[in-house]
Image (cartoon, rainbow, N blue to C red):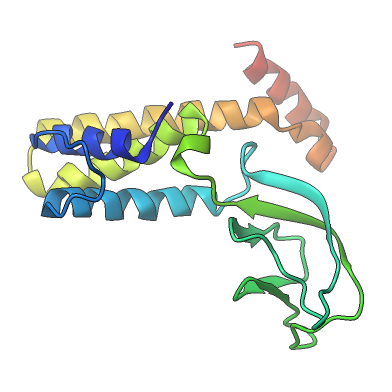
Length: 186
């Protein structure tokens, strides 16, 4: 199982620093690695992917009229008329966060914990953070390898995403469906 500690140690080793056993170590390199990893994990988890999307969710107002969303929900699908503010839905059109009716058919985008990331997402996030983490070393060879690693991990991440999404159905494009079949058969 991939963990935050695994991710931190991958970055530390890439920089030539001894791995740690505690992700909350006060060592500056550990804190730097942890911050970069959190930034990249949040960026990847903020987009709609096969592993962090929960569709057709309905929320009913609580006694105060608020439509509360679970803490791990980082965003809503772009088709939604709402935004999340302070853990509640907000309607920018009517400028309110108090509702009398349920919000139906929402799609949650969830900020998955390290332990709940598929390996393709874990590898991609770590590769991006590693490339940024070793950049100050100014080693062309190391930076070049890290950049290639990001490209490879991104391709694997994207291929996996297309395998799990029904791209042809999403936009009713027969060419996309044909392309998806080609990607799956690889």
